[in-house]
Amino acid sequence: MARDITKTGLKLEPHQIILRPLVTEKGLHKADRNNQYAFEVNKLAGKDAIRHAVEELFDVKVVRVNTQSRRGKPRRTRFRTGVTKEWKKAVVTLDKEDRINFF
Image 1 (tube, helix red, strand yellow):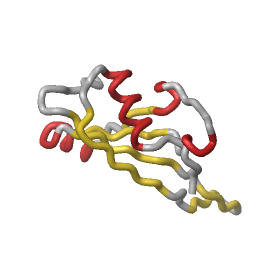
Image 2 (cartoon, rainbow, N blue to C red):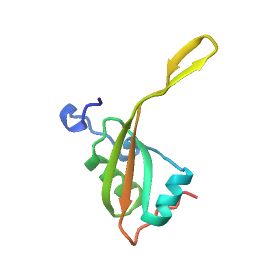
Image 3 (cartoon, rainbow, N blue to C red):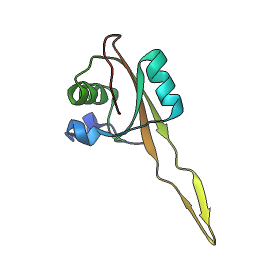
């Protein structure tokens, strides 16, 4: 489990919190229907930090932030076994008037 930024005293910039948008079929469907967008975020970032980062980077009003900590999956190549990295996902719900255009 990752430590929260508030307890460590770290100060992350918005571009360090939002790592990349997750553009998938499911994500595009949620964006059209529910005005929700998914991002891969820093594991140390909390919901408030994610909210402020999205509002600052994309100039939108965030209504709600949901987060998931995703475990790494086991992978195997020939004789070696390994695990993919753990990461954190944030699903951000925007105000009705706001949109984010990735394309």
